[in-house]
Image (cartoon, rainbow over all chains, first blue to last red; front, side):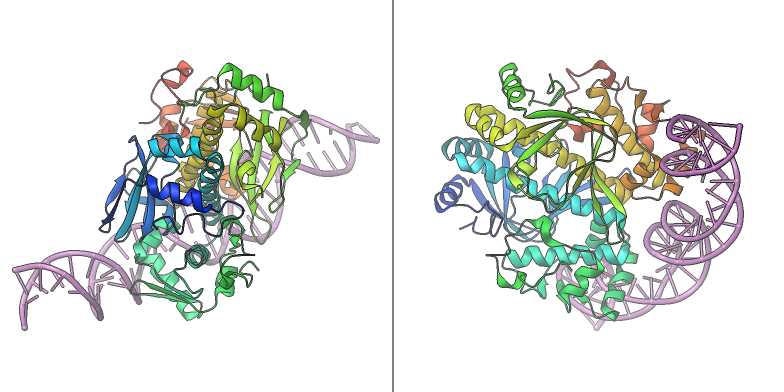
Length: 249
Length: 249
DNA sequence: GATATCTACTGACCCAGGTTAATCCCGCTC
DNA sequence: GAGCGGGATTAACCTGGGTCAGTAGATATC
C-alpha cells in the first residue's frame, strides 16, 4: 500500500477505497534512492509523477552563485511533483534529502484515472493546492519572521505534517536533514541556524540532534513562529487526536 | 468579454472559443470595487470565485502585530481565488489594491463546466498551478535576494505579466500601488523600499512615480533581480513579440 | 589506528536593513 | 488659499544576521 498516506486526514478530499486501489494499480515502479539524488531538473519535461513513500524530498531553486533556496520539503504521503502533470515542465529542481522510497505514476495513467473516476480530478487538484497553501506560509515565514521565528515555524509545520503521516508522536520525530538544509529552507546561513538552534535549546523549546527533532513544548514553539496549522487543511475533527490540542494560539 | 485575458499565451492551456463562451455564461455578476476593499477573509468559506477584469488585487497574511505580508498580486485576467473552488476555505485574505472590476463565478457553475467540458478541468487546474509557480518564485526572492534584488525581481515579474495581459509595452505600465505595498510584497519596510527606489533610479534601471512604473532597461533590471520568466509559463513562441528578447539572461 | 570527510559549533567583525522621527509634496476639501 | 491627509523622502542611529576563519566531534575508509 504505497498510497496509504496520500491525502490522509485532508478536509473533504480523502480517497475512497476504489480510488486508492486504482491509483495503486497505476504505479509504474517503486525504488529506493540514496540521499541527494536528483529526481528532476528545472526546465525539463516530465511524463510521470513521484509519490513519496518513505524519506524526505526537497524542491529548490539555485541562485546565480549556486546558493540554494528550498521551496518545498515533502514528507511520506506527498505526491511530490503532481503539479508536473498539468504543467508538464518543471520550474525548479527536485532531489532526495535522505534515503527515500518513491513510487512513480505515469501521466498517461493519471489521464486514464481522471477519465474513469470523476471525483479524482478534484482530489488530485486539491492535493496540489495544499502544496500551494504551504508555499504561501513559506512566503509569510520568509517575509515577516526573524530567524528564530522561521525555524520555529518550519519545525512546527514539519511536526504537524509528520503527525498526520503517523511519523511523529507530536513531540519527537526522525528528520534526517542537516542544519545546512534548515538554512536553505529558512533563507539563512548555516552559521546562523546553529545560533538559532542553540537559542531554541536554551529556551527549552526544542533540540535537533543526530537527525532527530524533539519538541519540548509544541504550543510555545508554534507561538514563537506564529504558526497556525489551518493552511495544512488537515481535518482535525477526525485526524489523529494528537492534533487536537490547539497549536494555533 | 470579461474572460479575454484568462490563460492568454499560457503554454498549452489556452481556452477554446466554446470554453470561453461557456465561462462567460457562468459569470454571476460584475462589479467595480474601490481600492482596499476586502473580498475574502482567512478562515471563511466561499461558494464563488473571482475573475479580475481590471485593476489589481492582493492576497496577504497578517502577522501577530498586524504587519502584512502579501503572498500574491493579481493582474487583469487572473482567476484570483480559483483555488478556493477545491479548497473551499481560504487560508489568507484577499483585497483590492486599486479600484478594480471583478466578475464572480459561482462554484456550482464551475462544477457544471467541469462536467460539460472535459478539457476545462485541466486548464483551470493549470491556472492555479501557475499561481503556485509564482509563489515559488516569491519564496526564492524573499529567501535569497537582497532588497534591491527583490524589488527588481518583482517589478520584472509585474512587467512580463502585464505585457502578456496587454497592459505594458515592455517598458512602462500603470501600477496604482504604493511604496508601502511594495514593502509588503518584498518583506521590507517602506523606508527601505524608498532607499531601494532611489538606488534603482540612480542606476538608471527604473523609476516609479505617481502610480506609473517605467523600466529603462528590462534586461539589466531582470539580471539585477535574477529574474527568469520561465515560471510564468508564458508561451513566448506565440505571445506578444515584446516578450521575445530574452529577459532571462 | 591514521586519515579524510562531514556536520556541529564558536568568536570577532561588519554591514544591510530596521527603527524612529522628521520634513516635504501634492491633491482635496471647505 | 488655508488646512489636511496620505504618500514620498531623508537623516541618525542601532541591531540581527552575514562573513570569515577557525575548532571539535562523529563516521567512514584504508
